[in-house]
Length: 314
Image (cartoon, rainbow, N blue to C red):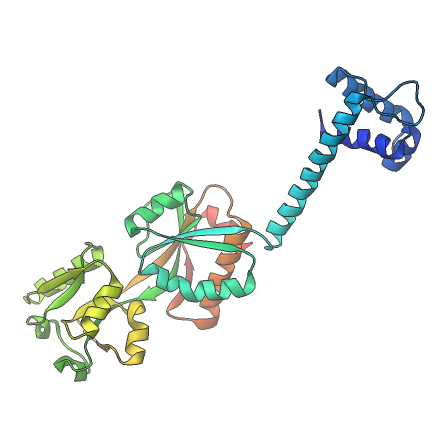
């Protein structure tokens, strides 16, 4: 049973005539009769009373009319829904980020919501190391990570440049310095994240290179906790600059440059190379690109060149 057969059947029902149904469908009467006859053969039941000339339905025809109307209505609803998706009047975008990379998303999502207010957004909080796998498993369409995944199945775009910043309480003795050296930090009590990371390893190596102890007195589970602890006068910290912009602007923390520490890094937007991105995801990509063009550094749009990335130009 095909939808086109049901359309022809309903045309005969509505017009109460095979000839008028043929005119409406721009077909010949024999063609319409053949379609109905084939449908009756497939169902094993007559659909019209043969003795009647006004298209009177049999009991089987009455049953089929109800289902045919519902099926065609569902088809029309599906077509309408797909058009809404194409025009970004409907849809859902699922992103994966951790506490840190989610901060990059805030201005992007702010602009995305202005342009696509009907799109539902879900940002899943995940461990950075798990985000690439979540994208590959399709539990998220796009991920934001602080490293470029070494996986040929993933495309990657550098979207933000960030650095570590040394932060202290405003009344800390180092708060008045224009810059400090690594060896000036050997006596400080550092507050650190309790999850090991490549960046922490770089810091440890830098302190070792300058023969300076890195004294980590307290380890906390989130950047927010670290910032609050330092702002209350408990030690110092090295945190991503992106994560303390607000606190520094409000005077709750002071950032002091440490020129000897080179721990800059980029944030990467990752997506599956295979398959097509949703219309919502493509619109999100366009917002990311436009934001980088309009605001400039530290926002970026440096796409890793791959054949599969060409569809992002859409």
